[in-house]
Image 1 (spheres, rainbow, N blue to C red):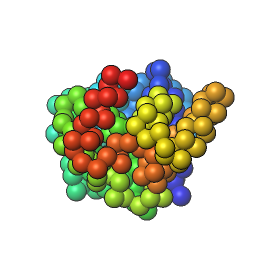
Image 2 (image 1 turned 45 degrees about the horizontal axis):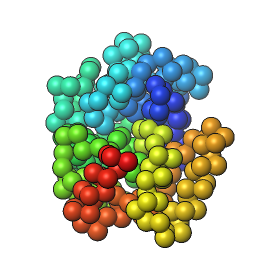
Image 3 (image 1 turned 120 degrees about the vertical axis):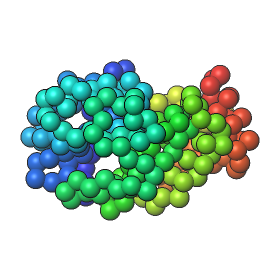
Image 4 (image 1 turned 60 degrees about the horizontal axis):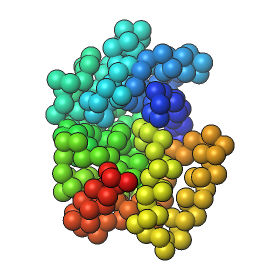
Length: 239
């Protein structure tokens, strides 16, 4: 099984380094270059690809420096092609990204940004959703609507429940504190919140996590319809 390497960056970002065979690796959503190049060097990995999920600067800020240092191929969302620095290959829903031993299906999940995509490595059991899905949360609707996010999350929650979700931010504690106000009687949520509080008190990360946890505890994934999701997103924005 491919084991992604989590690289903290900026204040709360996670960049992911994903080995794909023979000492090679892909980088997912590099916020900045230096910690990524350092982590790859420490692990003895050469970077061959950058996979971007969307155009926000804290996801593409390291593209050009990493590409200059490694000669890697930059892959990103076709609907945001003009905003992805160093883009070599634009991909959209239904496309596949092949990197030696790993293959990713590209899923369109536009909502946080209009052209947002996710990368699902089915055989490896990994999902890189960018800022669409977080532990007990979802992305803000900067360019999309509640309908868009409901469609995106409906698609993601249909993936295998054992899928490991490698999202791009450490927002879990804040998300948990909001989620418990939405479903105060949810025992699985209460147990998860206690676990998250303990982990964060020790400075431990809470990502990646299993998709099944979101089916049990994420108020956005669990929203019954667009209206409920929209109301919960507005409440979280003001929380």
